[in-house]
Length: 281
Image 1 (cartoon, rainbow, N blue to C red):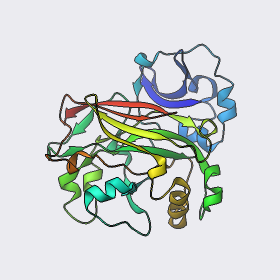
Image 2 (spheres, rainbow, N blue to C red):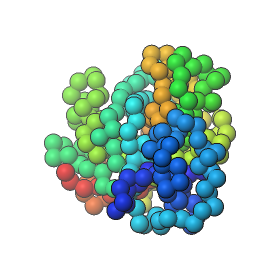
Image 3 (cartoon, one colour):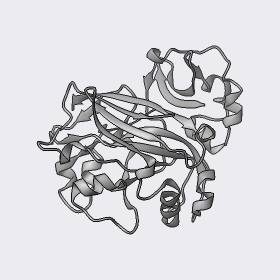
Image 4 (cartoon, one colour):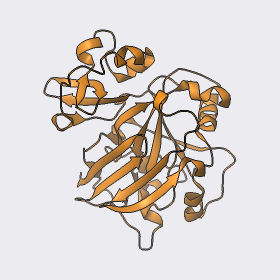
């Protein structure tokens, strides 16, 4: 099942994306689950699925897509998690996952413009797999980790590279408003069994820039969940952004930066394609 958050003239809502369009779940269960995060927290996927066969309320072109979870408690990102990316950065492997945080304001939805800030022209793409947490937990073991996942989505972890390098902490370059993208939807975990090999790619103006599989991850998804939940309680709707493979624009010669008018696509098989344009802010 594909679940998304979107906006229409009637306001913000969430629903099921089917082959025919979007079923507005707020119309059916919004009195108990105000948004997608609440539905996840209520473990109400079976209840949502009862409405799969309803006539769609909207076509995909009729909505403004929002980040899958617009209001997460936490967005926890992993850096340097594919070996080819570690090599291209000239860094050494770390013994534990390299962690940083993003704020909700730094995200946009599918088909919404990623904004190049006026402070920099060094806006880079990063294809990543987003894991949406479904069940709260602290000190989650790797063997139990899969049971805490609600679903998966595409993420473009857009980075303003010169600001990222101002200090050894990456926060500034990772959190300019509307520089990353999250969507179009989440595919529920029942459709992607544990240890499924996923392929992810990034295309810039139709040219493939990144391509890898989850087999190339240094720290696999259960390890990330175990590590992060060691120091913070993971809550339903929290987002783990699991790292990018090699081929980023900053490490090309000459560097390739995203610029206004560009189109960038992040594709994950079994999930979908996240598409965004680039605009100046």
